Length: 179
Image 1: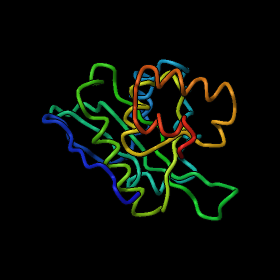
Image 2: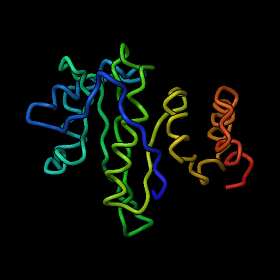
Image 3: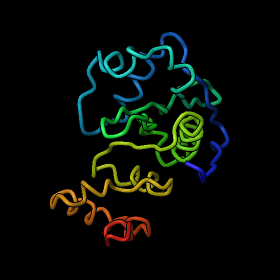
């Protein structure tokens, strides 16, 4: 959390914070970006409304200069029963498909990680192995597979398969046991 890579949004984009009614904006962006699961109408409420007061500080949207909302990321938290301190959590990163590959993702991670660093000593995220290019960004920001999960054969196999595509130096070290 001390050496967060700093990236700015590309020209034509800007950040904005959460505002009333953005539950619908968030749902539309996540639905458009999510290839693996169906996004239920009540997902936003289940994920965020118990802590709605934190949304203005911890949920970010990327908009075009024309005013179209195209991406979202949350700097949330994850309670961990093994540790009395909550971990920061990168939560629900989504970019509309027509804006993927245009450069907002790294700037979104910078924005969220800077927020998490103000509140937490450590950060985590959850993802799936099908999100290859998102995982590359996460590795670039210092995230690594959970070492305990790497002890599970199928999990380690999925990470090795990812490494065949990514060839990422941090992942090489993690998979070799040099953690």
